[in-house]
Amino acid sequence: IPTSSITVNPENRSTDADTPDLAPAPDLLLATAFADPRARVDEILELPFERREKSRFRAVMLSGETIGVSMPPGTLLRHGTRLKLDDGRVVAVEAELETLLEVRAVDAQELARIAYHVGNRHVPLQIGESCLWLLPDHVLRAMVVGLGGQVVEVQAAFEPESGAYGHSHVHHQHDDQGHGGRIHVFDSRHESP
Image 1 (cartoon, one colour):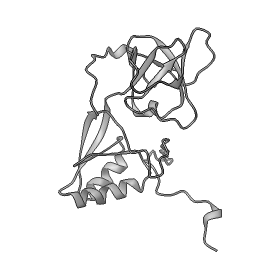
Image 2: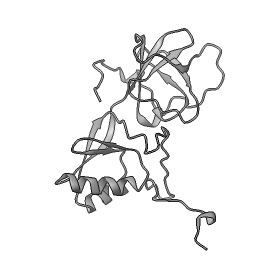
Image 3: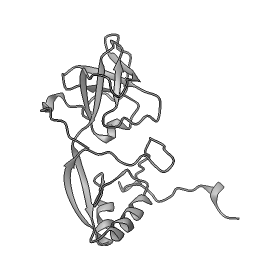
């Protein structure tokens, strides 16, 4: 993913401290529709993956202006997505640089084996030519190292796979000890007789 050449003022970044919901505000501009992907960009909205997988939130554009985003449930905002504001301006969504775990292995087969095991945890995963990227998780880091992988923290834009069936929304569950995704969660309807 190409990173933006724009210098970002940290005070203008969207953070978890931004109001995540969209309580009515008469002067708040809303983005409720996608714009043409080739449309001229008027504003930039830089967001980490955690925010881009939400469909309703407030955020601060690089210009410092606060907007609301209200898209259909399950919408995932990808790097490069164009949104249309109520006033007609077009906002480009950019993947914010964030801390990720970069996973490498001695060869492609070992990397594929590690990707298989990480994928079984149903966590967001980005696949590169010779490495994997995932959000920081101490349990997954230990598992990857145990499988022979090398793990380093990097700052990069995160664009994980959307899923085998084209679903855009990623479910990242945590158990009560703060561990990452679970392999499977079954209830009594799925037990064998």
